[in-house]
Image 1 (cartoon, rainbow, N blue to C red):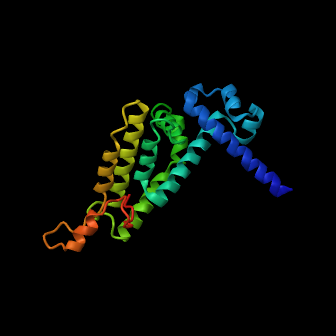
Image 2 (cartoon, rainbow, N blue to C red; image 1 turned 135 degrees about the horizontal axis):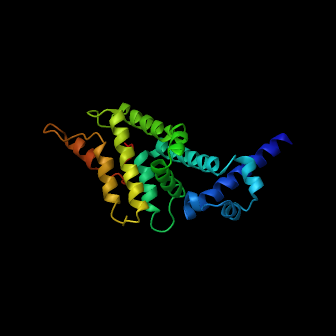
Length: 218
């Protein structure tokens, strides 16, 4: 029975977070009233705030949940893949963490109290990016003339720029090549010296979507 009860609580918490994500994305933080949260989650305010102390705690939990999911993508495929996911879904069905990310960015600029609370939870993505870059450097796939900290900050700035671009509703159809440039800018390029072999050049020119498996360097 305790196990079933715990599973039920976890499922209910997930139901609340999923509904709240839709609500915050559609209406923003201020527009996500308790009534709208009830409508999107299908639960009463009592059920919602049994799991979360208040709306701010609910939003922080949602933002942390989405940051964790993004960090999982980074661990497997790199931060540029997070950007590609945001971009590829921006036309019709935004990646489900985009709305939360936009609202986090806005509140960080306008709400000092939120900024202080978020600072305690915001290291997941940075840590995952740094670990991914360290792994790629150890594998010999990452440029070694720039520090890991600088590369991490660089990729995070690009991510924030993309989020701002999407938030302003600017055209995004032509940004895939931009992300290609970002990705290439952190790679370690072999075979460019005059002494490179034909094999080196062939390896370098294999397309990232080709059949040969080239490790991701994001």
